[in-house]
Length: 326
Image (tube, rainbow, N blue to C red):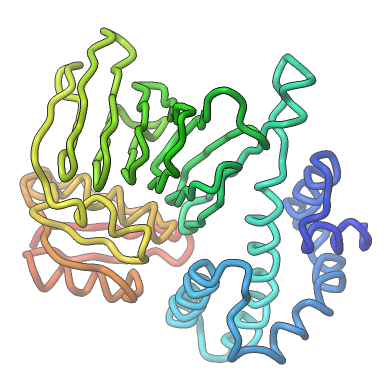
């Protein structure tokens, strides 16, 4: 297993080996062995605290913010030990995100399966990846994406969640498939939101042009720059927007403009990997405007409570925030 950990951290595992490591990590009984396996990488990380990893700087910054947040929730006597554990976790998470890009889906056709790559970003994590044609895909928290290791006559990407694409121009069509609709791209940059646990389907165009086809009724619309398409009553609607409200997440911040409270809370849960509960119908009528960038979740809750008549509490056992109107 020690050799597998080394391969895992350096992203050289095959799919079966990566799955074995992930299963081993999930078992709490293996924690002592995991710490011993990861100690060399942890010591290297400690000796280079001032240097961010070249692998994914934005992910590392996110981990550091989570460390600071965790520090605020723990007793002082536990801070040193917890920081140590999180620094080990940082190495593991970076290895997981890198290694996940090499995992292979089990498709019915073995020839296809060997050439399909799958990326999954858990809540609280965002990453980016270069596609085989040189296009770039930024993947938001709680999302899944898959694509072939080499594009054929068309460039196909499957998405469940949210992603921003900067697509290289080519004669080959670039197609993003979601469960609610497909986007055909003509050399452009755009954002897609289609989470598997929500009925939202949104496409925001920054540059170029895209054709969108809604799956149920085969309705098709073409977007122009600074236009936003969304589903309403199973029909695609289009409006003019400022793209930054829909794309700023890829730059490490969220910008809200009269965001409905339920949507605002859902985005916070994904962004910080937390659970937020509220049963007060008054909160459903509220909206939020503002920018969140480097703030911890506690700082965000403080800002929200000051901006509106809201109080909040946090349960250390369940790790759930509860909101109430004052």
